[in-house]
Image (cartoon, rainbow, N blue to C red; front, side, top):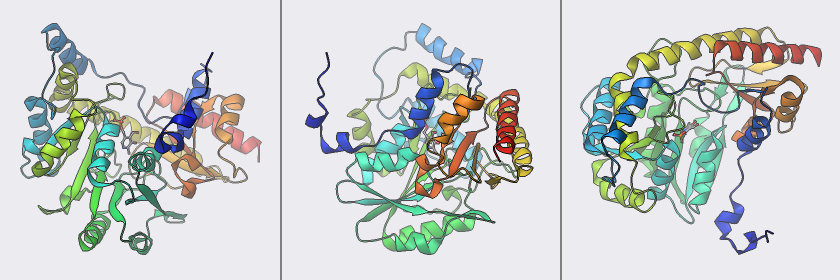
Length: 392
Ligand SMILES: Cc1ncc(COP(=O)(O)O)c(C=O)c1O
């Protein structure tokens, strides 16, 4: 017998909202025929050479406690990867290995925001950002982007108007999950100027930087505009580029002066990441470029397919994503997209995420992840566009 004990929990534990995406996923998982496009991951297993590096490590007996900041080889591999991607030199002292992108976000926010503070979150945004702010006792201050003929647009006057004496940081995710909106270098410069003027931190989430569709190797980054001394915490993950969502390994990049504070927060949460997983992560960085390119080509093909199919459907409103691997769209005549994902699972066997889960700016939208195989994306989109035509 279970007796409800929730009334005895802390305020934060009681008030933290459940994930609407998980609710859809839980419903869908019980239905094996549903094509699952609700979650942000590819359907490819982690490449063999990454798994082999991890198993070699286990076989060699690397099963002990390790340095909290991460093994030196991985911190160095991260520095080399960043130098390759962004140009210039990166010290390995800037990198801290975490137990997932999500833990990077938690640690970054704990470093800079607490009770009474506000963190600005442009929305639609992955709901975990705002929830993680709340879990720190701080308040997310959402700034909705506007959707119109030009796609999603961030109004910088809205952003500036959200800043008040309690504001400590701007959480900035580009390319954006869920909209695919990707900030230009000028827009990043603008955000940085605001942060400098008001003494704010920027938490830069550039997890999808490799997933851009204009032929470039990466999206514009705060690395392109930042100067030493700018208060920027980069939160990142191995999950997306190397199909390692289940591994739960990520990293923070920050000024080395923050090392002791980051180390403390890691020490008092996970106390470091298993060495064998870090060996896998080294292999991903050092040998994974071919895989990343394969994955990007795959999602680019799917993005074009979904965009073409949606463009033929007069009831579907969307803007073709310039980054990340999601299509965020609305269906005219279907304003209640909180219930619609359940209906679509029951009626046509496809699993989408409710747009309102990403903030009220996304009410009426749905999110479709197109990182899966072409066959499953094509089948799901075929079923959806037929359903949209038939229910008109
Ligand atoms: C924008 C963004 N940041 C961070 C994460 C967290 O990644 P991880 O799976 O490593 O926790 C996600 C995951 O979906 C994401 O979409």
